Structure formats: structure tokens, C-alpha cells
Amino acid sequence: MQKTFKITAPEGLHARPATQLVSAVNSLDADIQLIHGSKSANLKSIMGVMAQAVPHGATVTITAEGVEAEKAIEKVTEVFVSQSLGEETE
Amino acid sequence: MLSNLFKKKDKEEKVLAPVSGQLMPIDQVPDPVFSGKMMGEGIAVMPDSGSVVSPVDGTVVMVADTGHAIGIRSAQGTEFLIHIGLETVALKGEGFNVLVRQDDKVTAGQPLIEADWTYLGENANSTVTPIVVTNGEGKTVRPVAEGTCTAGETVIMTVTAG
Image (cartoon, rainbow over all chains, first blue to last red; front, side):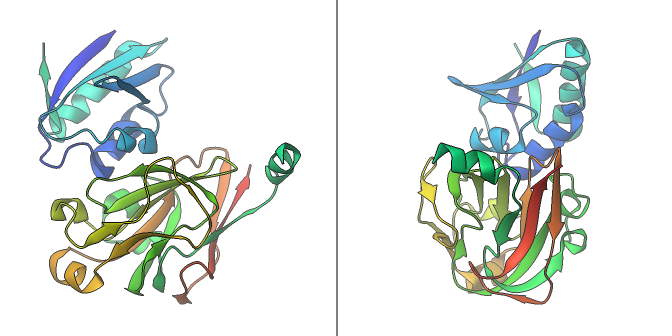
């Protein structure tokens, strides 16, 4: 499953947002990827997410596979919304 | 060379100070992302002068466009994030001069980023520079120094498997 977000965080997905996203899903039994343009990063890796250098205004797709995939997407959505990092888009 | 790599796996990694200054326990950094160890175990330096240098031999895996943060992966696979000052992403690159690029091989003590500490002192929330292990699962990360540290010389932390 997957969900797409437009990044609204003024500084993009730098250290703090990356950490919040990773912390939310780290313990889940799922393979979760953050796709930005042609590059994909493991959403359980702070360094991987930061290396994507996702800027304000960019669109990212979160994909999740595995037993807790649904929960992963829920958690990610919660962090995006509660931390004002991004909004859901089609 | 390859056999060296495997032997090293069991060895303790020594992490050198990324910048000269005064060491500060990570839980005293005035930012919960660091003090709560959300990002990982580590230590911080209140810098006094000089460049930010590589804490280990490794590869540059991430360097922020804004120059305020850099990630190094050691030969053993440990990932270190050095975050120069707090909320410094907002400075949009001002006060930083990045000397390396992503995928560059670097050696311990090699200058990575020049920081204008005077500018940062006036414009950032804090110049305190945490260095944390972002993939510490299954590793023991131990801060081993306090007081004054010298960039590229003082061993400030050790990392061991298990």
C-alpha cells in the first residue's frame, strides 16, 4: 500500500522531521520506503531519509509492505499531519 | 584488505571529536530530538574554533544542501550524524562552507565543513554540535570523555557490536 504527501514543512525533511518519521515506524514489522523523484529510501533510516534532501513543496510517496503495512501508513500519516510536515495528496 | 575489514568488525571503533571545544552529555543538549536520544546515542561539543572534521575513516553518506549537517558511515557500517548548531537548517547555508561531497571517502580528522562560529553564535539558537549514531541498534555506543576536546585528536566515544 502507499500514500502520497506534499511536503509543507518550511525546511523540508531535515533532521527533526526525519527523526520523527523514523521513530514512528521503526518498531513495525513492515518494509517502508520513502520515494522522492527516482530515489527510494528506507523510512527506518534517519540518514537515508535525510540524504533524500526532500525540500518544501516536493511530493513524496510512502510505500509499505508486510504484516504491519497498514499500521505503518497510519503512523506516517499521523506524523505528517500532527507535525505539520505535509498534507495528503492524490 | 577484505580480511582486515572482517577482523575489524569485532573491534571497538574509536570516534574522534568532530570539532574542538567543550564536551557536553547528549542529554543536556537543549533540543529533545537530541537530549531524548530520539536520533540515537551520542555526545555533543560546544565548539570554540576550527573546522568540523570527520570523526572516523569512512564515507560521506549525507551532506545537507544547507551545510549544517553531515553523515559519515564508517568501514564497520556505523552511521554518524554531526549536526552543527541547533535549528541551523533555518540559516539556509549561511555560515557554512562544505568541503566534501556525498560518496567522498574521508579519513578521521579530515576537514568536512568550515563553520563561521561568530556568525552562528549570533544567528543560531545554539552552536552546540551533537554527534550521534543513527543506526545504533545492536551496538553499544559509549561516550568516553568530558571536558575539553580537540578536533580529530580526542577520542570522545566508542562503538562496539553487541
